[in-house]
Image (cartoon, rainbow, N blue to C red):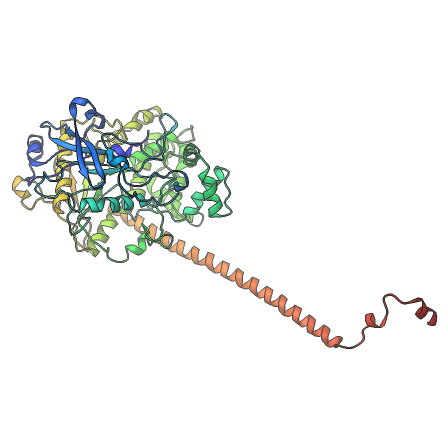
Length: 606
């Protein structure tokens, strides 16, 4: 399975609605939004009868798009412009460079934006092939109206909603610089059509983690680069020589080398964003995340973030299915339990006791004997390792340091046949002997995305209840886009519980998104959060101590070498001075008194 990010398309914009009760949502959806779930099934609007060609003049030339229709019960029109280049194609010598902005008009003054362009290279684990193209820096724009036809400005949500973009992923990623180039290219055009004039960003929605998660930033990115280079028979004697060698490798060779480094499809997470401050003029991440989070955000905006209860199901199933061990649960436990924890820690060799504590906290003895128990307990471990340990602390940080509201959520809806991000793994898991009801009915990582976005693979068909929750999510996300709050202030008149922002200094509460929505004042997995807070603090201290010890060891070694050199120099000087004292300048030495080549005459005289 691969992900064509260019085809994740949704646009939802509210029109002054009052949030209805859950069983009234589907009846009123068309009356409360401009357009709902644009291009819901990505290939469904490809029929000629479903669209009309649109030519739109811009300052870069004429762009050709399509007028299409949503697949809601009361279909509404929207305009789609696909495959718009936002940077030069990163080919040849541009492969590893920061993306370069496009200059000038479109070739011939026209751009055909009626179809998707290629996504970036990646490995398809279903067909076992490298798919995609390096020429992949394109974006798609979806809008309910065209410039001049709308009476008000429309908010644009970059990256997922309304404007979707394709950017390079591991190992081609250049520190997410594509995002900055895309924003820089788009902002002049957005200023008069879409975005609010006083700020490019009016809010942020964080799904699937936060910047302070263990996996979010690479501590030692050079290690991954060296490993990749060695696998491709490239030298590591210098960065220049390494880069020069990789330029001559094909995309297929690079992707295959990267894939072979992964033990469980995605694990370990080798290629991650890096701190690039000091490496370029305009860094994406100028300082480590913990340093940035030690002070208030520079430009605070309203924030919405959260997740689902059993995030780790997707990752646990991936480990169980793609494990190299084909033996019983005991062998799988020995292979994966310690490795999956320590692979994210920079100094695993010095923290084995911490790993032992984590393993004893999450795994029972029964996990070594039963594959279902192992999958369930590994799922809990992944849930906390990857998400619980960071997103709620991120919410607390932004609420405490920002002047803007922070809204948190937990989506708890899941029916037996609801779409789930883990659906492609279910059949494979059954083949490995997984029968656990908790695994197959749990709410996995990405299940909130599956009810918001049209994803380019089969996750299951939504039922009537799923569509109602989808509408509820759509309303809330759209309202947040529009107002900075996921609800209108008068929502209580419809009997829906109010969604309150996080209160600084108090335990992080969250809004439960389900058929019984409402606030939960009990923090999510508070015991596990405390465990990881203590664990990560200890690891940071160990890392700092280890780094300090490493640095001091090198300093001491350098000092010792300098001292040895100084002793040698002083000894040489003393030896020369003593030699001069023994044989003063101008005195006759034994060698000067005895001729090296005596003449025959002198020999006879003697």
